[in-house]
Length: 137
Image 1 (cartoon, rainbow, N blue to C red):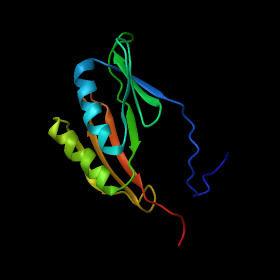
Image 2: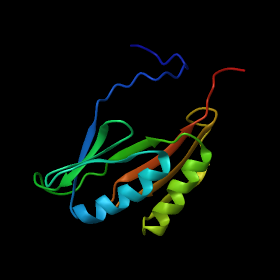
Image 3: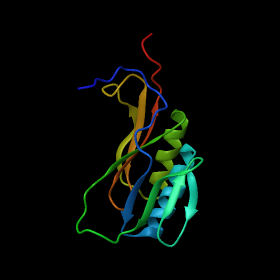
């Protein structure tokens, strides 16, 4: 089994992720507001799907069309700094999001991990995180 080396890089495993939303209008409003605080914006808007990203859409939402019931997802959006995590959190609260965890350091993840967690309109656990870890001193 490969082990984490403790070195952070810009290599990403996922190309994109998509969620089905019970109330697509509420979800578009929520994600447009909170993701703008971490530099992510609505880039594609079609009747079937909305794509958010920085330079290309990597986070997609669309109307709930398949499956039954609800399974909570956890999504963590990278923030460029601590101030962006705070802005994300305050915007989410203003949008009516349930607070899961207020902005704080989470040293159990790694040094410099600063994040806030809220629920989106569908009940998913959405996080903004600044991974300020620069490696061993």
